[in-house]
Image 1: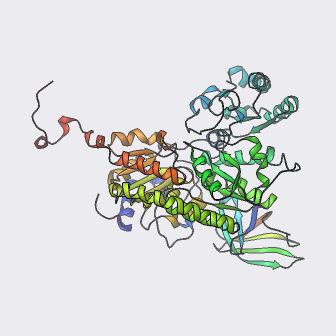
Image 2 (image 1 turned 45 degrees about the vertical axis):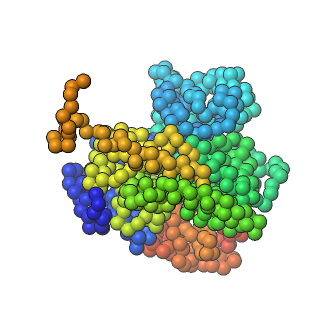
Image 3 (image 1 turned 90 degrees about the horizontal axis):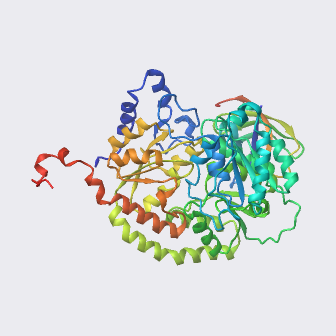
Length: 492
Length: 74
């Protein structure tokens, strides 16, 4: 729609969409929808987040197990993650995030293999501890090069009260490897967000301090990338920039990361935090225990990358600052060429986003670099501190929706008519059928990387490919088209 | 009582963080701010007031503590 999105119009739209709900549901959902106002510095005054989803609506959220196994633990390549419980949780969550890794699958890397204890009725009745112990023995025999094992609890484990900690400790002593029990049963919390927290706490308690006493050949330029899951190679595209400016990346958490890297992380000089939502907990812990400062950065789109590189460099000496300028000077002409090519094709297009932890705010800069405008943004599982950050990055009168329901999102899209939607797989086909260009922004729609300068070129190409794809005009069946527009055709 | 963390921000001010409630805000005033006695009532920019038992000033921040909510938003 060509008409400008004003505060009044956005507010009216929210009222209209809420109209169909029963009184109680309406009251509850109203708290999760807002129109951005840059004057407000505290999101809790105008939006409620991290609350239980309303029963009866379509929500896009996941569970604590998804947050722990799927997001934080899954990408660590040399740790075997056991989905401890019935087979489904592991089978249906396998490999969907495309966390790339360098290694040989099944020999020293285990990201794309599903390991499960496959609970049967008798395991629920008699307890699954024996089965877990047997499973660990089998793993040790079949995959001797694994560096560790994590036990990711599924719901039944918590319900029947299995003592996975005891099994883990006993077996860890037996096989001489790190075994981490993670209490991430799916019923905990309201979304995958608590799973991130539980996973962070498990890393803190079972892994982080393992090498505290060991010598480490450090440099003054050691950094760690936190919260980059190497989706489609994101972490690699980020890492080369940091290395080019003279920093040494000691660890990647957790995309293409290893157990050793994680154990060495307390030795770094600065933690670089990309996904605030899923890893701020461990960053805060390391700041307290090891005195390591942390900073958030944003590697989407040249404007934000340049800002971030300079900010990262400001924590170090002149050598790194020069390095940052050198990197920026090297890539600026390349990025200008990318923008010159795609901006004319994308200028003025409107985008609506509904993703997870950081993208609704982080990708805004990249869209703006391409001349696109974000008219709506929302998170599945953000907390208020995410919205505090989002409101600063968004334009006034942007629609902001928390844990948006299937109905609300479709209705917003019908009314605002964006030129592109960035969201997850559950929304993808609904919007495809509505003939709205759509990118799956959880795993970059089987493309990527999108981080870093290299990633931006791919990002720009993908957005152009989607928005300007001729297929979107072919969605109406010939007999539904207005008669005048349809030329007479002979039946084939 | 809730676990909180107090850290310094880039400007050198104190920041209050309550993970359970996602409250992260600047501390506008602290009742005791001396090397031998530090803590007491904390007033936040969002209007919240919390109390921590006075302790000798911590050697470095951040520090995790137990705090009691006295007043203000939750």
